Image (cartoon, rainbow, N blue to C red; front, side):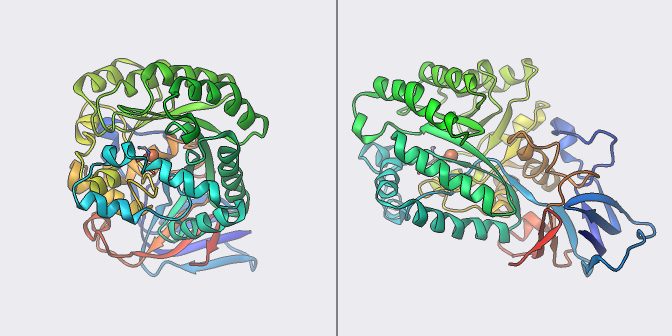
Length: 417
Ligand code: NIG
Ligand code: FE
């Protein structure tokens, strides 16, 4: 299958290095290489060639599309979502308007446990159908690669049910899907007041069961005040690593609760949230030569009215930064990566180019797949979208509610929107 996109106004996010970058840190994050008046040629779902000189010779079997002067960007990579969930939680949204905090709602048995109750009642098929509605929505919005977590099961059976749904999404859509086991999202209702026993259940029963069905690429823990301690997190990460699941930690959201340190010590791939990240955390990351990706979730800060992660400081300290949506029913009912990019610019003071790199190459790195996704480079999977003609790259986050996408291509084929 051959595909030629011509009349591209700007082809952005390209990487022409012999060895394309796997992540961008510090000053490199502001560089979003691009060429104007370009074309892009793909063969068998991969990028074969691109340029702004003469087009490659094509045969009758090549699909040819015009970008009509629009911009082409690599698909968004969303490295942190919880899009498999049952129902919605708009009542808590109203509770928050009336003054309750996220933590207070959770303490009353709402929040994550509310979603766990609904998920328990729902069949696997229905859960899949509900999740697919959201999957289609994010594909239309330009996401091509996504991580999806469990964590609304909170008992072995329901956690497996969630992970099987994620596996079905993996197999039935053109998205690149990475799955994460998040049994340690909250203590399951049956274990109320017995957190230590619940942690033992995760380690002794859930992790081996998940591994036996090969259902998770990564393991996550909500390491934060009122949820799991760094010691519990360390034990769970160690157990997961034994089965080949690297950590992706929820850390430093509600309080500076040791999430960065435990993620570093246990060779995690990303540490996400970071709304309460401290200067010590930043210094610790600077000192360690690690591939741990600090990941900000600006949609969460927006929706919960919380401080934003210190993304500007992270980058100014020479570190990389990824951005993801955190799409979930409680803290971020949105998987709109363009909006997350806008928030990163407006609220975290990232340059548009930095925010776009954070939401493409760096978020692919936070899923361990930036060798194949996250930039326009020869040999990479042909995941990209074409925009309507736009005046510049900066227009993308600037026009923060304007839909700009005209066509989406995943694995070198158009996705019907
Ligand atoms: O990443 N912070 C922990 N977990 C999710 C929220 C889950 C929920 O409220 O349902 C998050 O924000
Ligand atoms: Fe999350």
